[in-house]
Amino acid sequence: MHAMVEGKQMVFILDFAPKELWGIALGAFHTIIGLATLPSGIIAGALWGYINPTATFLYGSVLGFLAAALLALKKIA
Image 1 (tube, rainbow, N blue to C red):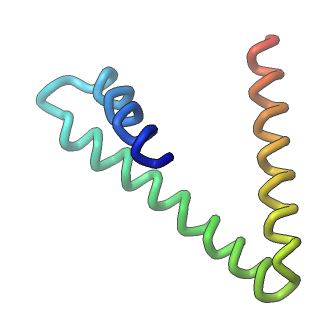
Image 2 (image 1 turned 90 degrees about the horizontal axis):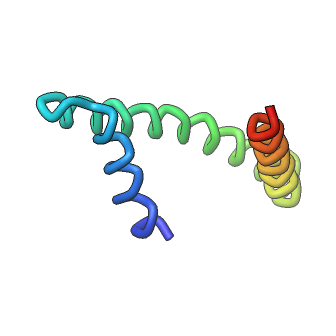
């Protein structure tokens, strides 16, 4: 799955950056992804360890449905 998406993400990012800044654009993109992944891993680990594994998946599904609802509202507006 990751291999199917990664190339498309990079091309999407490079479409917005001038050619001389491609390295900086990709570096910034991957930095932002890493900074977003760190808290999500900490939250998932805390839910798994302190509550139970089901809470981790429930939290993820609630956030997924919330993101889908917000995207649907954005498309409508």
